[in-house]
Image (tube, rainbow over all chains, first blue to last red; front, side):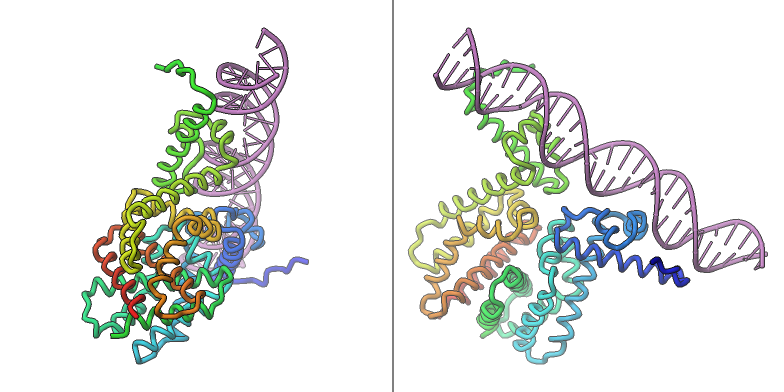
Length: 197
Length: 197
DNA sequence: TTGCATACATGCAGCCTGTATGTTAACAAT
DNA sequence: ATTGTTAACATACAGGCTGCATGTATGCAA
């Protein structure tokens, strides 16, 4: 039975189809990966045609970029919500780490943000995307917690990158089936070892 | 001018073409990435046809896997050679880190092993490949250096993974243009912080 | 030297991407 | 209310790429 299109405005229609495509694309990118996902399959899952896809997105990579951006935004929001306004630097870092694991527990997120994302869009673009949202808070948090160490700024920045890499790897391992408690403990210990004067 | 094939044995001929394909594939995978490298271009660069490629490799992914394996093997050999038999655990770890950066300085290696590799072959396969060669030595080294801490084995293993992730990220940043000295210093500090009793 | 297997080269089918063109419905102006 | 315009799609098409099937020549073994 085909509904008789309840007279939507143009704006509404666009938003709806755009979301449909994004959702279908996300599901397929997650289950098959970017390369093995064909645009005909995406639009079929969304109940549309490739015309709609190429009307809303410049090409397949742009669609992937949109999926990734939405995902990164959601991760940043989750972290902000869960570990937003902690006062003590140490507690903020630890809570941020836990919040990151929570956020990355959403199925498919690890593959999108940590595997296909860097490979398809390149590290620089992914880094820029990360810096725009969550990356900065980690660097600031670590700088605050390591202030007594009186390190050069570039050193702190480098260590923030390394710590961020550890977060990512932990999320990757947890996603692959490792016990979260093990990695949460290891991360906490790592943070503590880094910031204790 | 076509040389009149100096009467090679069959074995020699196979090895030669196989190497030709591997070399050409590596160069193109590095410069354009796996997805944007077409098999016609690879064999053209090697002065062959696609028939040779599909005779020696099951498919494009298998060729990529062969390139990756050769690369990982070379990295492991370099590290073994540069930081092979250090006695003190701390010095072994520090030398291993430096050797890893040396090994990863080979152009294209970062992209192959840290970007396209995980995305194309999957994390599990890459992890298995890494564990078969270099990953184990890092875990053992860290375990030796952290023995006084009396941690559970799973914790040490997790921290070895995290440290390995830090190595990778450092190599990635150096490859992207960051100063090696900055990251070498940060890594050394990280190691020291981890293993000091 | 005869027969077979190896090492390729060539040709073909199917799929996928990106674009160009067509069609319908919304919106703006009169 | 009517008409022109444009947005939002659907359809059709061209080029390229992958994998396989087939063909051919050479090494090799009996």
